[in-house]
Length: 81
Image (cartoon, rainbow, N blue to C red):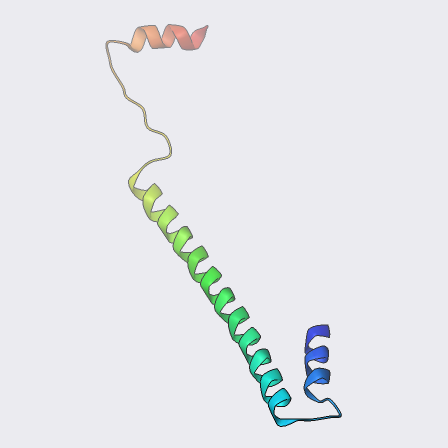
C-alpha cells in the first residue's frame, strides 16, 4: 500500500509538466508490467517443475531393487546381523 501511495503522490505533483507526467506514468506502467510478468513466469515454471517431477517419478520408481534367488540366503544372513 505504501508503494501505491507514493506512486499516486508522485504522479499528482503540484507542478505538472507534460513530459514528467508522461514519464512517471510510463515508468509506473513498466514496473507493474514487469512484476506481473515475473509472477506469471514463476508460476508457470513452478507448475512445470511439479508436473515434470510427477511424470518422471511415475516412470522411474523411488526405490528399485534386484532380486536374485541364489543370493537370497546370504542377503538374509546379512540383514539378521
